[in-house]
Image (cartoon, rainbow, N blue to C red; front, side, top):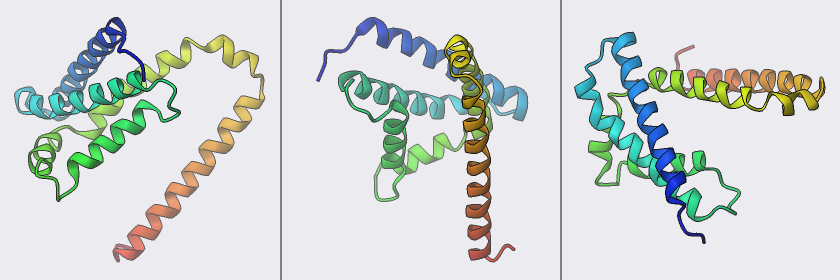
Length: 155
């Protein structure tokens, strides 16, 4: 267990606020959704993300990423037997998934762009591995989607 680095957490909080504002803007521009109606859901998503980053900061040697903690916290808050699930689901359902992916992918691109020299040093092998992984994931997702749609009788 480690003490929390306040400066790092403050920077992460600033980035989360910026991302939240971008998500709200993307929803307003793309879907016409009211920013005021979306704020409570965005605050809840922000809080879950901040808690996950705090857990990751307190346990830095854990191999479990902050994204995993976000997933677990979101799952725990949305379980039907949880008394908080009703309000949590009501407000977070006002946030469109595609509005979240826009800033997320932008930051992922910036992150990869900052490591371009490391990617160059991996040679052509990284491109081959990436293509194999992307194709495998695509077909796995397609098979899962087809199986679920058959079970539901949609195809």
